[in-house]
Image (cartoon, rainbow, N blue to C red; front, side, top):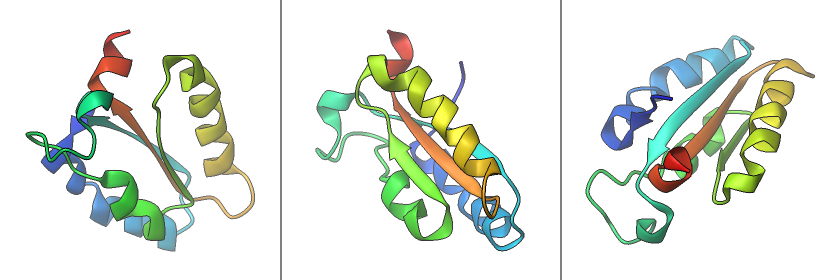
Length: 98
C-alpha cells in the first residue's frame, strides 16, 4: 500500500474540495507519522484530518489495526450514500506496516 504522506497530502485539498462541491464519491488514503509521534510535530506530520473536515463528508485517522477493515468499508459506504462526496482515511506508518 502506498499513501501520500504529510505535505504531499495537502496537495489533495483542492481535489477534495472540488469533489465535495461536485458531489463526487472519492476515498483518499493518506499517510501519517507513527501513532506514537502524532501531535509531537514530527517530521512531515500534517493534520490532514483536521484540514479536511470542513471540505469532506468524513475524515478519520486509523489508530488501531483492528479497525482498519471496518474503517475502509465505512469510508466507501459514506462516500457513495446520500449526497456523494469525499472521505479521507489517514493511516499512520505503524498501522500501514502491521
